[in-house]
Length: 613
Image 1: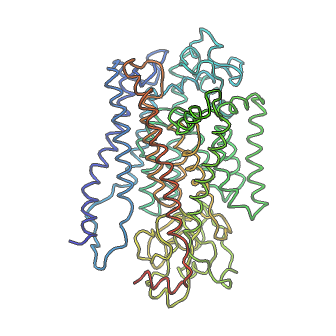
Image 2 (image 1 turned 120 degrees about the vertical axis):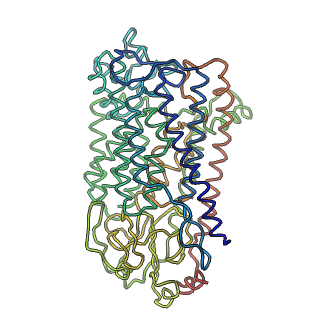
């Protein structure tokens, strides 16, 4: 039995358990909300006939926390396994098995399951944290004529909405942007004195944003079955995101929807800029995504100015309406250090070595920025080096057609695509001519890619299954390969890193480096990764989310059994070591992968012959 056949059989054996684990995780998440108030689900006041609905059985606290732990572990391990299975095997041996011994799940079915689960969760009480109670209180303040940026729930004694806010957030003002506050105010206006109805309206906004993001990503990847399946796993059918973003009902979902839509609308700089501004005006840390389009358009100042100007107008108008007092709470939060962050370990080391007279927040902020810069540089260095050599100068005179999402031009042949600069797919792979490596060598033509974060070595032949689908100039079918691929390079890009690659690299670096990190923050990184090429970064971020989810089990203080305090006081700090290990491993992997991806100095024909041999 060949190694390829053994690999396929192993994939077949693991595919079923991985799918079952993901399904079980989603079902457990639904069951937790369905059971009603518990240590995982805050109670909601209001008429019982109003949504959200639950059985209100008051389950055993240990049982429901066990359900949550099982949902996180099964979902994380199943997702990691499924992502590994969707990665093609290494270079096949001559005469290797051509027919698969396992059938991957249908991406459309996964999208349907994820959207259905999100819709169901919208009708169940939120679980996992009490943040949604804060949202309801902030909206309530607006409807009562108070500023949520200068008041906390404690300032509304006896109010049916504000009284539900849990410790330690009762005195905290809002740290969210004006657009998030507007959504919360609309929900409060509709819900009135009913906390249940207010939460339900917020849940509808949240679920709609999650589903819309999933459908956008699915539409963007629909021409490539492998990318479509991976995208569904990373976002729509991701059990950890359904647990954190949908069941947890966090406002981050709204910001992610805006940022993903902005990246897919880059061919329309006005619309893209407005979406970027909306995302920043929901949650300010989403602004890192804007650096992706900024980098892509750095040589097109007029277009960049238009996009940036539209984004800035939206943000300025939003903050002008709510007032400058909205900035102070965000500034304070930016200096916080979450309990599961590995920077909490650093803080403890500094206090034990230097002294306990300071929290060392300034030093930790500087250190986190350095780590962020190192990780971002490592990931983007890998992306930029995972390019094949550029075309000869004579072939670069042909301008790139202005293709953006939603734009179509007549298909060109793979030979024509080879003569156009900047032709890179969203998986950032442009193959040598499909006649094979030998013919590629004899032709002397070399193809290139724009930035990607991929494990495919430069110069891999077109029949390398790791190199993904080939692409022509408009993202249609390559005549040689006969497969479809999406095109998301910016209009007239000249071989640089594309906006989604830069944004995904920066956001992945951010969630690993920031001192204040919570599980649902990883959602933006995963939404962006679904737009770029598959790589080991996918699994690093999923593992990061898995560890964080276990660290914040649950992300509540009130209503917890006293004999389970060890989850918060012992397990959470210890899991910070795992996050530190993951951060170091990501930096090392990116560094080593970039070294392997360094373009060799040999000529393209010699390189093609060497790979073919």
